[in-house]
Image (cartoon, rainbow, N blue to C red; front, side, top):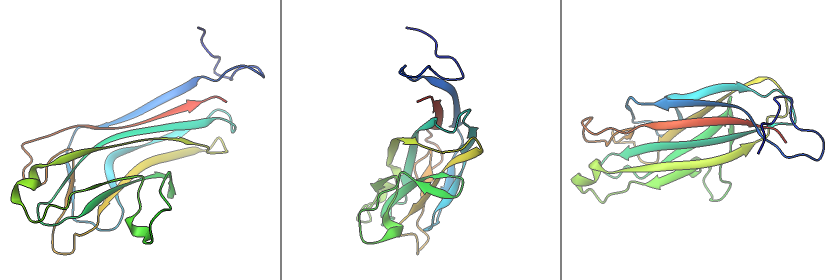
Length: 173
């Protein structure tokens, strides 16, 4: 029931939120990339005030896929150019992400009107007070014949929209 000082808490005390930043993406994004691609509007920079502090990262991203066998869509979280919070399970590295959903549709044309929300939280330790850029990349598994994936919309039309967010919080330890 108290406000934690910006410099942190005394030894033996609890932690607190020092700063919060948020990117809100309200526009739409489409891609046919099968390799990780930056999603414009879903990145922001933060420098922690103490090297022992952590960064709590949370995102909610609306993803849509093409109706013709796009396959899974993957989102990946990065600290600058380093992937963080990503699975090591599975035998193929390009099939791993922070989150993924299956947009495989057995060629049903109405499935191009589907979206799913990808959500993730991760507590990151930057270990220094430098500014770090946290960003989200996306890709789909099967885009070799022109299929694609979309952010904040369904694939088939831009008439339907959503918003996506990326939030980072400095947490004192």
